[in-house]
Length: 233
Image 1: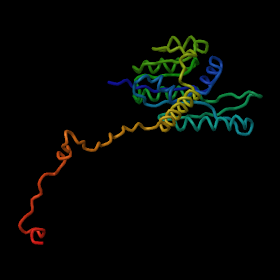
Image 2: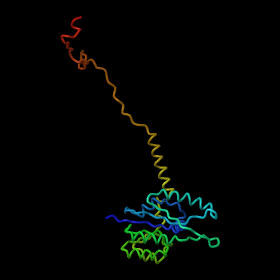
Image 3: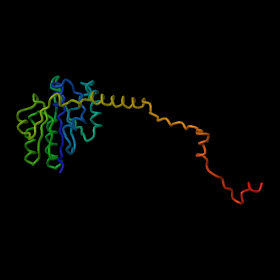
Image 4: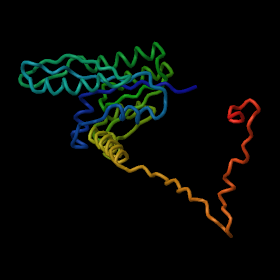
């Protein structure tokens, strides 16, 4: 029986981990999901984050809208947005951890997956993972080593420590480069001249030894029937 997996991505944790360890955040999520699934059956992937404040962080809100539009168009990826509040000038997440933990537990109880893949290093999820293990489910944690809590590392059945090389081919710019290369190959193929095999010319019959070899091309004697009008001219 094919193993069923569900992926739970802590968006804020992943964003800051990529920024810190890779210096970039333009992750191609479809390819990332494929890499984590590794040929298994994907129930669904879930991405969690807060919705930016359009009044106090207008530019961030617009940029997030563009980013979320790409996520909404990714097959089998659900986007779940929580709220936020300010403590002074600091924006604080509200309810994201509870949303993730609740979905991990609820989907295990509904038997929607065999293995839960958590993309986060936050130790607050350790108890939820232990609970689904008690349901008989397997747990996988995906995180950079520097962003991983000890509690979470001890709870996971499988631990995938991310490194910069893991993301080769998983960036949006890599996808655009592949697309550009494919389009270039198509254009080059269209420019290529088709090779046409020339048809050999037919040579006229030659006269050999005083005899016309064209006789071999003669259709032979012509026979007329009695009723043919040519016989009665």
